[in-house]
Image (cartoon, rainbow, N blue to C red):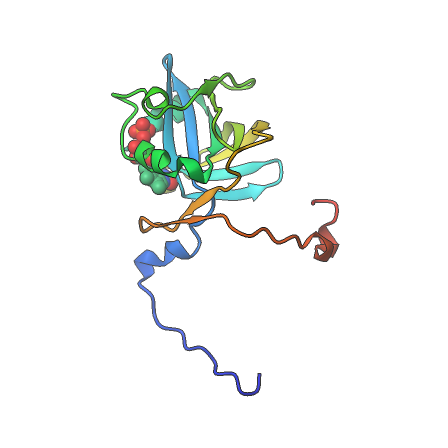
Length: 189
Ligand SMILES: Cc1cc2nc3c(=O)[nH]c(=O)nc-3n(C[C@H](O)[C@H](O)[C@H](O)COP(=O)(O)O)c2cc1C
């Protein structure tokens, strides 16, 4: 465009480049194993299909890893921004020695399809089964398929939040409705 200066791209450290795309909503993963509920925080995940199918990166250093492998199921919960500090703290301690629901004042609610509990205080809960773990060894990547979904129909705080990956977080802001412009995708929206 005439008169407009073209921005110049500066090189960015490759090992920090995941922060460009990591900012999906921060999730809580709830599991149940050997009679115990647990929670962990996950920010590395991917939406993979409308079924819904999603991928999460969950490393073997987490206590939740064995629960996910052995039970083959979990609940994916989307916490509101009001719970941001608790969610970070949940990601900084282990369920091996702690009941995180009790410690962080969260309420486990019975799910229908899986043993892992819903998190009552979250905006959304998705009961999931692990449907593929062929990339677990190389990439800690598990593919999940949703079996039943829940939401809080009247939350006090409707905002999810997103991890940049450097210890900073972005809280949901303005919602822009462009449904009328999604001309090719009217069946999906
Ligand atoms: C903001 C945040 C995001 C995190 N994202 C991930 C992630 O995507 N994958 C992962 O394996 N661990 C992630 N963690 C670390 C786990 O939540 C952490 O290791 C947790 O203590 C595991 O709990 P557990 O040992 O009870 O399973 C994250 C932690 C924080 C604070």
